[in-house]
Length: 44
Image (cartoon, rainbow, N blue to C red; front, side, top):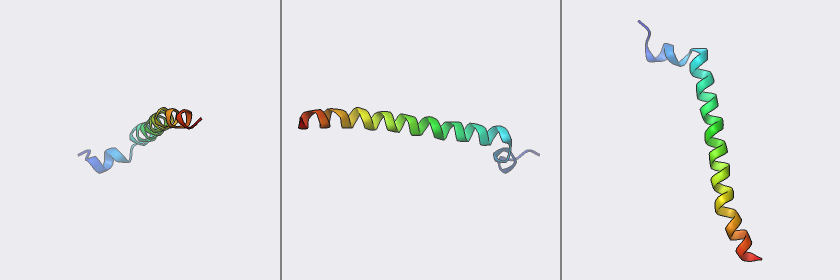
C-alpha cells in the first residue's frame, strides 16, 4: 500500500513542495513591498 509517508518521499512531492515554498516567498515579498512603499512615500 502506498501511504502518506511514502508519498512525501517521492521526488514529485519534494519538487512541488519546494516550488510552492518559492511561490509563497515571492508573494510575501510582493505584499510587503506594496505595504511598505506607501508608508515610505508618505514620509517624504
